[in-house]
Image 1 (cartoon, rainbow, N blue to C red):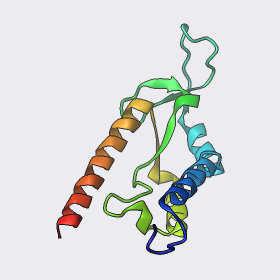
Image 2 (cartoon, rainbow, N blue to C red):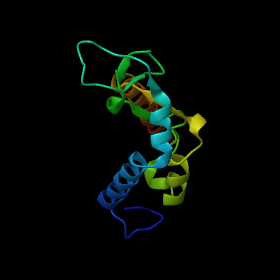
Image 3 (cartoon, one colour):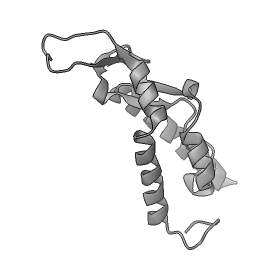
Length: 130
């Protein structure tokens, strides 16, 4: 249960988080960042792919439809649990300034997320010991 609103279950909070992320995925802000990621590139082995982007971290060229818009400053901070955040704070962090967004290939995004999640777990362990 959520301490701020005990009527909202953990499952419902997860559904809200997913809904907000889906809305962001269709937002004008995300569309602008994706449009800015498009590069002039063609691949003879993939003639049907017309739009390409380049990962900001590894410089791999990927089809634009596979690019992931990532928050440099994570939506859920490394030292705060999602359950401790208000919906307004989550929304403000999702719809941030464009300079807090980058476009990554799936591999780089997964590595970045894995590292952030490890730091979150370590913080949670340290917090529970106190």
